[in-house]
Image (cartoon, rainbow, N blue to C red; front, side, top):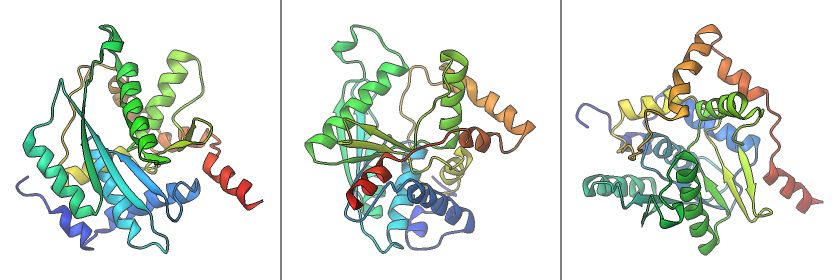
Length: 259
C-alpha cells in the first residue's frame, strides 16, 4: 500500500473535510431511522471489502463524538473454498484492533451440501445471512450492520422493478423474527465513490472476496446503467431513494415503549 495515507491518521483525528462529510452522512442515516441507541451492541458484517471497512471506520470514529456509547463487534466469514490469505487476515486484525472493534473470523463453506450442487447470488447471500444470524442469536446481539450504500439501493430497485415487477428495495432498517433481530444499513445515503476513494487514498486493508459471478451478475451489469442515469440527472440516485417512504421498525418499538 505504498504511497497511501495511513488510516491511523483518521483514527487519531486527522480527518479531511470529505471524510468528515462521509462520517456525518453515515450518522444522519443512523439518526434518521434511530438505528443505534445507548448500550446497544452492533455486529458489523465484515466482508473485508471497501464498503464494510469504511462502515467500520465511520461507526468507530463517530462513537468518540457522541454522548451515548455502543459496543461494536465485527464478524468476517472466510469461505473455505476461497480462503483469504493469512497476510490479509493479519492486516484486518490490526485494522479492527486500531478501531477498537472486536474482530472474529469464522471458516464456513460457500457451497454447503444443502445447495445440492446449485449456486447463485441469492443462495450465497442467504447462506451469509444465515451465518450472521446464527452468530447474533448465539451471542444475544440484536443489530447487524451491513455495508450497503446508496448505489446498492438503486441497483436493487432497478433489479426488482425491471425483472420482478416490484417497486421495492433494501431497507435502511429491516426487521426479522418479530423484532428479535434487525439489519441496519447506516451508509444507505452514501455514494459508492466515497468508499472507493477511501480505499484509493488510505491504506485500508480491503480484500475483494472471491465471487464466481463478480463480473457477470445482474448487479454488476446495472452499474454502468446507473452511471448513465446520473449523467442525465446527477441526483438520479437520490430521486430513486426518495421514491420510498421508509418506516423505521426500531423507531416504532421505541415509541411503543415510551407509551
